[in-house]
Image (cartoon, rainbow, N blue to C red):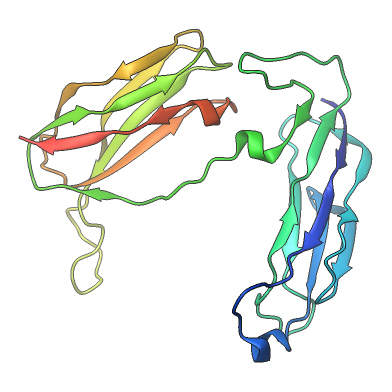
Length: 227
């Protein structure tokens, strides 16, 4: 619980290179807003062709654990708005009022910038041949972090059949997990034979933590070989 302030600038990105000039003629800009829960704290409409970097700020916001702050980008305000040419550059900074400390890895306890904790999830499955045993290998790197980090492999078969119907025999289960403690540093190869008794062929590789850690310093390049 405490008080936060939000700062930073937001701008509409002007298209460059080759683009559809006819379609751009119908572009209508964006509406951007900062919102806490259901309450809007700040908003700005940026018209087409306006590349000005506008201050996007909200001060002295009372927050409690579990509150959500939203940074919204709306593709125009007209019924015909379609999202074309609506890319923006926006990296808000959230500052918590309190005594500043530096966490392991150099991150601040009071200043949060999205690029420091952003995780880009491909959310794709790796398909392997049917096998009841898999060989896992690949390098994993983790320094001392602020929380435990868990590696996980989730296996499944096809959710739908070739006709798009639900598969009555669909299965999804965790076949591998390993948790590394917050104060455990690791930089090496992970090798292990993993039982896959149901012969599930779709694999999803996950890295998770119960709180935000410095994800930029955590790397996993898993490889799977069927036996």
